[in-house]
Structures are given as structure tokens and as C-alpha cells.
Amino acid sequence: MAPKRSMTGDTVVTDKAPQSPANTADTDDTLRGDAIIDIVEDGNLAPRFSSDSRSSARDDAAQPKDEKKSTVLRRITGSFKSIPEPEDVTETRTRNLEETPNGFPRLAAFQSSEANFSLYRSFSYLHSRVLLDLQDEITCLERELHDIDLDDEAEDPDRLRSRELDIDRASNEGDTRNRRVIMREIKDKLMEYDDVLIKTRTLESFQRPSDRNYLSVRRYYHNTDPLMDADMDSIRSKEDIVSIRSGREWANFDGSVESALGSFDNGLKKLFRLKEPPLQDLFRTPELRAKSTNKYISFYSSSRIDKLINVMITFVIFILLVIPVVTMYRLTTTDGHAGAANDKSTSNINTFNAVGVLIVFTLLFSAAMSLLTKAARHDIFAASAAYCAILVVFIGNFTGPGN
Image (tube, rainbow, N blue to C red):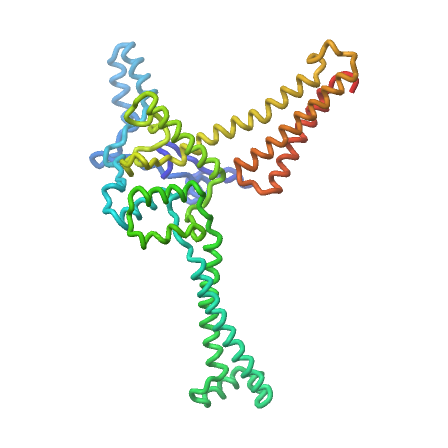
């Protein structure tokens, strides 16, 4: 649903002369936007603005000047005030882990409560066994088909040149295992084999869970003991576990930030002897807090964590751009070493120091690209080359005297 009180649309510009939007079909083609749903009260739309202009005009004429000004001001500012939604609109229902029966029901509620906890076995070994079995069956059918082709080539070569003739001859052979029967079996097996092969390839494209998410699920198994020991073998097969969640761009960095945030939040709670972690309201929505009352389970809002990550990434980019520029400016500008204005060797030394700063910060930029993003190698190379080129141009424009 589109945000309340907002509308966005696209305008199509054509070479035709402007026309009146009397035709609704033309209007729909030129302007498209999101719908806005208002609250209905007593069968009518809730009053968002002053609608009866005639009665308002009569009332304004009878009011004093000061009251008239305040009424006009309220009318102008009233359109910007948000009307609280009714309770039946804002009410949400969240499944609580502790209220779900222990066992498979509670385990399912836990793994569905957070996408990072949706870890399941891919059964890659069993898929390989099924593929190998189907592969061998198709190979035997292929060999059998080849033998029949060789026999017909020597005895009845016309059957290999006409499908209709082959079908006619096969209909007179009764229950004999002929080419038609083998071809039908090959078709069925190939369809089955291709289906399993494609699905196996799809499973292999699933991402492996991070160590942090896998340990979180294992800790939940350890703390709550939801299943019998024999039923917990699936989660122990770490190399066979896949995550159904598609990874975010800074997934590893997000996990580190969430862990540090949780430790910092618990530290503040112990330091100030609070009942609840003080940062809980900032990074956890009411729905996330309602999922569990277990103090060992913490749900963080991914959207709010992303906002924090964006701020941190912006700060890192700012540091990587400003600090080397300021440092190289101090090293290469004439004002930075006014006492050595005529010393050529000193100027050369400062220029080489600026080149050293360039190398160090280019390495830091490449490391930040590798750690904070999932950029490909060629993307890292291109971005690092562009970053280095910017600093090189800066050095060339602000070299010291004698260069």
C-alpha cells in the first residue's frame, strides 16, 4: 500500500499538441499514480479538509478579526496534521513463541520468525543418489536402443528411415520389447531426470548460512530442546544446511553490527541497572518484541539496521575521501612548508609522502569495498582505480615549488 497522503505518477510526453483531458482514457494513459485509501465513518469519508466553503464564509463574516485569523490559520495548518488511525487498522497479531506448543510447532514458529533462522537441509547426498540411479537407468535404455538400431540396420533398415513404418511393424510384434516401448520409457525417464536435475541445480544456488545464524539456531536447540535427540540430526548436518533467504549486500557486516549492538545494549542495561535494554525501542519494532519473551532471543528490525549501516558506510566514505585530501594538501601546498619554499629536495620529499598517503588510502578503500560490499573483483578493481585517479589528479594540481 502506498504511504498515506502521498501520490506519485508518471507523465508521458508526446509530440502531439496538448489536448483537453476530457477523455478519461487519455487521462489514464498520461497520468498514473498510486491509490489512496481513506477511512470511512458512518458511510462517508472522514473529513480530511474543510469541505463546506459557503458555511465557512458566513461564519467567518460573523466572527471578530482575531478569531477569523485563527480560524484561517487552523484551516491552513489543519491539512498538514495527521489523523490517528482507528484501532482496528493499527491492531496487529503476532505469533508468540512461548505460547506455541513445544516441539515441531514451536520450532516452526521460531524458524519462521526471522528469515535468517530459516535453515533447512538440502539433502544433496540423496539428490545425488537419485540422479545417479536415474542416470544409470537411462544409460541402460540408451544401450538397449542402440542394440535394437544395430539389429534393424542389418535386418530391416527401412524401420530406421520411417517412423510410421516402425510404428506399424511394432504393432504387429505384440508384447515384444521393441523400439517404441524403449523410446516411451526413455522419454519418461528423461523428464523425471531433467526435473530432478534442475531442482538440484536450484538448491545448489541457495546460499549457505553464516556461522552467526547457524550458531543462533543451534543455541536455540540447546536452550529449549524442542525435539528428541534422534530428530535433531538434521541441524547437525552443517555442510548440508541452506538458507532460503537471499543475502543482503552487507550481510556479514550487518551481522557484526547486530552482535556489537546487542552487546552494547546489554552493557548499558547492566551499567544503569535497567529492566529493559535502552536501545530496544530504537532497533526493535513492537511486533518483533511481541514474538518472544525469552531474554536470550533478540529480534532486530532489518530496515532499521540497514539505516544504521547506511550512516556508517557514509561516514567511512567521508573519511576515505576527506582525510587523504587534507593530508596531501598539507604536504604538497606551498603554504604547508613556507619555510622551505626554495628547498627543492624538501618539496620532493613531501610529494613522495603524498604518494605514500595515496597508496595507503587506496588500499584502505579496496579493503572497505571487499569487506562492506559484495562487489565483484572487477568492480573492486575499477572503483579502486577511479579512487586512485582522483587522488593522483589532486596531487598533480597541488604540488609544491620546484615540481
